Amino acid sequence: MMNISLSILCMNIALGSLFAEVDFQSKKVEESRAKESRNVFERCKENIRYYALEEGQTHHDITELLLASKDVAKIHKSMIIEQNRRIVVFEYPSDGNAVKGYISYTPKYKSASLLVFLRGGNRILGLMNPANDFSFAKDYTVIATTYRGGMNEGRDEFGGSEVEDVENLVQFIPQLESMLQMQLAPHQKFILGGSRGGMEMFLALVRSPFLQNYFDKAISLSGPMDLRTTIALRQDMKNMFVRDFGLTLGERADAWLTYRSPIHHCCALRKDLPLLIIQGTEDHRTHLSHGRAMFAELSRLGNNVTYWEIAGATHCLANQRNRIGFIVDWLENF
Image (tube, rainbow, N blue to C red; front, top):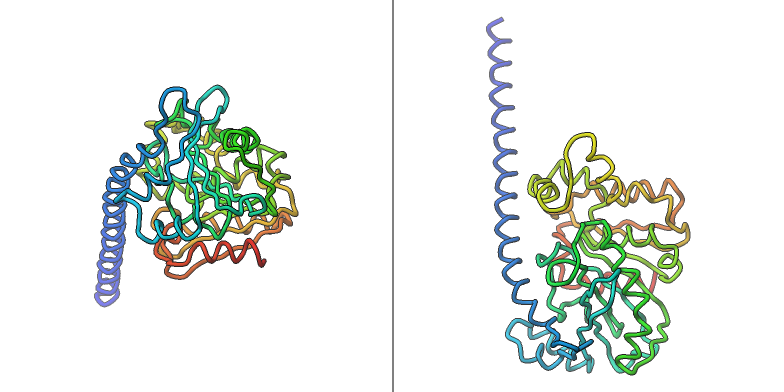
């Protein structure tokens, strides 16, 4: 009996130590994530200046501003010069709100593939410098939205009405062509969402048959597919949803979470639309279960879906030097 009791005692001590270690590691991840978010937010506040338009302006070529900026990486400046790219910020209407976007294009714009890029984050957090590596995907013409709210008119609802900003952006392309005196005739049209942008991409597709037929391929990069998983694993996101985006805990939470979680709307997707879901095994923001569960559900329904899990990759493959190469390779060869 004494040996058994001693064994149980030792086991309890070992389990207690294990749980304490897991809890300690979890707190370390949370602290690291919070520190990273604070640093990102400060950089994002600086990025607002690139989207500035004077009163009456509908668009503004910021190429020279980016080339002169100390915030733009040398490799991106070189790509602007080598590809002879122009990057233009513009404003477009979305359900009565003026929303900013940008277009990055080369002299091959007439026939180059079109990539619509959806950013992550919310409001100011995650606002990208237009000279980011997605803007230089091969010779593609890249068009991006920044979503309503934040520096724009309207209110970001994190999977609510701002999802309309995606279709409204695509519908605005003919007016953008007219503004810039250019005509796009892309060989293929793609859509890519990173982080929250992956969620936005799927929600935009399931809510818009027009977009499902407009795009030839779609990619979610580290996208959250089920916000129930998000609030279960990330207290910071749960707190933010309650504080800023209208989540009410309790029975009323179900409708809010379901509406914003792509995994619950897979049946609305066109079966033959090629989809790619990418996740990194070292992603501390979007848990692997998001992509795995979404892939399983789409596969069960018979959708044309591919799943890539990149060993050692962090959120949005940020630590992978050739993440754009991976993406372009699938878009063009798979």
